[in-house]
Length: 280
Ligand SMILES: [Zn+2]
Image (cartoon, rainbow, N blue to C red; front, side, top):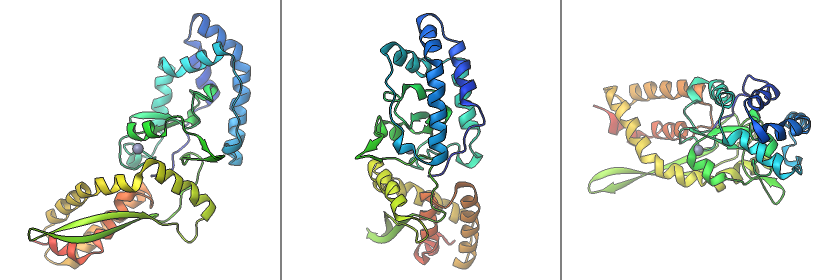
């Protein structure tokens, strides 16, 4: 899980480029709606700047305008493809293949953070398009506010903690004479992070079932790390720990401190049981 860089583009210009490619009644409806849409773009920018997204209300659109605005995203033209490339291409290289919502999947889709059914005017607004994996996109769906509070982190706008929030626990089970790790996860609010803001993170984790998804993914991460550790051919746990810690530190620079895999690796590297198992 990581923050996203705002794409280096002007949302208004992107919208105009997409509208220019439309024809017939769709083009007519979009030209009619353009002034109001741009007013809504300004309002969205204000809410991003003031961190007041929760209070952004929906606009009442006529049916033909709603259909035309949704058409902008549903029927992809070159300008929309270019916008998607800009959004993906502006993310730091170590993060481009990681879904920000979960930190597990590959971000092959785009989520409309403000659901396009309620906010059709933002269907192709760059700040409303979040690259994410299909599983997260399907779970989030049209969910926006729940009891007046946002249900998911906005990775463009919401600052994340600057230290780890996923706490792995590793117990070793004896399975037919072989020690097998049982890895579970909990969520921990850092001391320097506001508890009220952390409630949104808890809500996000809960709705996406992230701790359980991490538990399911953990065994393959364990085996990958063990293969890398054994390939080092270290003969002491000290040498192996120094090597692995350096590897984790370098990846933390690129992926940030909230990454759940790095938290798991760190927990394993702290365990002598794991290090002994990796010695040659
Ligand atoms: Zn995901």
